Image 1 (cartoon, rainbow, N blue to C red):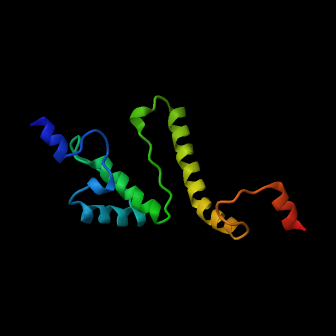
Image 2 (tube, helix red, strand yellow):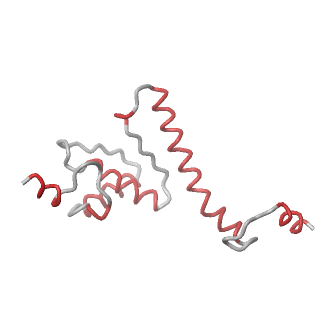
Image 3 (cartoon, one colour):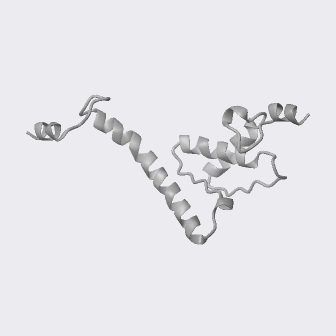
Length: 126
């Protein structure tokens, strides 16, 4: 019986977006409220999908251009670790936010898939 339950309900960690079932309306509501600036707390018994829902909502918000941060506090042992985890998440947001427009801008000057060299820079200047 336990083996069958593992096939019906993924066990281990948070599930991916494809494995979240019958929660679309709730996820959409959470997404709209967070996008509107409301704070949200997900409360429920262990192993009922709270983390999976939170990850999916944050994934959708990030896709829409919002800054998001995910920090697993159970893996942290000090305030310094918390501060470092928050800084790391912030840096990821900044890099992801600027990378797409920057790479599009740079591709205007050089074809994708080719390497830049100092000669390219010198030739473009003059």
